[in-house]
Amino acid sequence: MGTEVNLSVNKLTIDWGKNNSFTGHFWLFDNSNFCLRHDDWNYSDGELALSIKLSDVKFRMNVLGYSLMECENRFKELIERQPNGTYIVLNFQILQRIIFEINLPVVTDRYIFEKNYESFYDWLADRIRGDHEYSELELAKQKQIGDEYWDDLDYFLLEQVGPYILLRLFCENDNNSKMNLNWYCHEVIENGWVSLADIEYIDENMLKVSHDAIYGRLQEIAIQESRNNSTIASMDKWLKLHGAKNYVTNYIKVSNGGRTSRIRYTTPTFVRNVIHHPENKNNSFSKSNLINSINTIILILKSVLPDDHKEAR
Image (cartoon, rainbow, N blue to C red; front, side, top):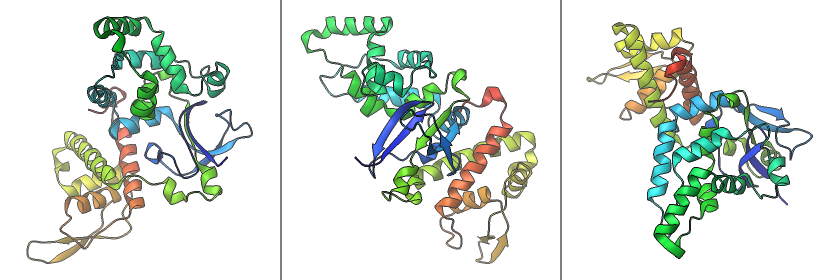
């Protein structure tokens, strides 16, 4: 049978895999501490999972490339890339409304199973087809195309839209904010299919781009507070005031004349400088340093932004 890996919103599985064949979701979580969870009905006795509140997931997704606007743009790109002969009439607004209306305490894996669906995606496709606004769009397209009309909605939702756009839409409903996103991935480590390092894998280039963007946004906020925060040194002091810790070693700065000096920076500034100055081979950081740094600046950004400004630009 093998060992299953599930990503679940409350008690609803939105992605799954088995053994060493699964998608890595570690970027959604702010730590690698496993918690005992009873959310998924497949684990009636409880199972260890990475877990995070949807309110925190929403903010992470906003600053890591999955804001609501970015999700809509991704969705539109998927529609534009459909091959000839496939007609997807679903638009983002209908999908957003239908996901928003889902009552997560009711719509669980057990509910999906008892309704005789193989997965949430099959149920969702039928829920969309039963929507009045969608039905009108589908009827208009059928009249236009004739017998050749084929939407392949089930495949589109599962294989192309996938879990992240749907997860971000679940985050839009404030009633879901205190629910957990759980990644049941501990058993594949325990059974020897993968290591913890495999679970913690995140694309490093994506992290560097995100780190640069978030650090830059924090700089804008710090400068708005005081123009004196426009230098790296003053910015680093600002970060310390907001909880950033010093990096484990000094940053080695090289002047135009080749002379070196050692400066103690916070981890976010150290990482920022290494990213910005690849020509300086005296400094480096590990992926774990990068992940810790990005989690730090996400927390700082969340703490300094007012609630009505927490949507990523």
